[in-house]
Structures are given as structure tokens and as C-alpha cells.
Image: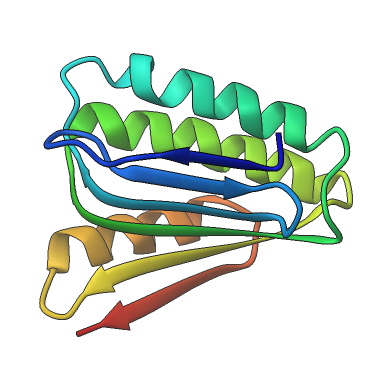
Length: 125
């Protein structure tokens, strides 16, 4: 599979994972009732991808709202990314947040300070 594409719903973000270019984008609202059902398959895909990754992997989080269950699974993804990075598989995390959205910004800042991986906080208007 070269490109995995999952459309957004009212409670889950869209996911586009292009394994040819090493780009993963998660965008939208993440408020699923059972976040494991959404994030666990994505974590498995990421693990599989890191067996033979691109030179650099870019992960873009563009989430406008995140519930506490989703934030726990984002931690799981960030742990996978950090482990891969420590194994020499270069990864960059871009955490996009809307102007004036302190909650998403602060969550991104917390993640940035919690993991040893290149992590950019990017404001968009």
C-alpha cells in the first residue's frame, strides 16, 4: 500500500499516509467514542512503515479539537515516532494549531517537551 486515505467523520480526523513520500497527515476533529478503534490500526500501520521508512518521515497533526481519549493515543503514536527516531529513522513532527487556540497549542507544547524528536509548533490562521 503506497497511500492510505481515510475520510474524516464528525468524530474522527482524516488520515493520509503516503508511504512513498514518508508523509502522514492527521487533520480535523478527534473525538471518537472509542479512540482505540481509530488509533490502534494507525499505530500498527506506522510500526509496519518504520520497518522500511523513507529517509525522513514527516508527521503533520492538524487537529482542531482533541478529546482526552484521543490525546492518550496520540501519545502512543509519538512514542512510536520517538523510538524510530532513536533507531536512526529520521522523523519530524509538525503540530499545527489555530491562532488563539490555547488548548491545542499547549497540548502540542507538552508533547514537544515530552519527546526527543524534532517537533515544530506551527500556527495557522
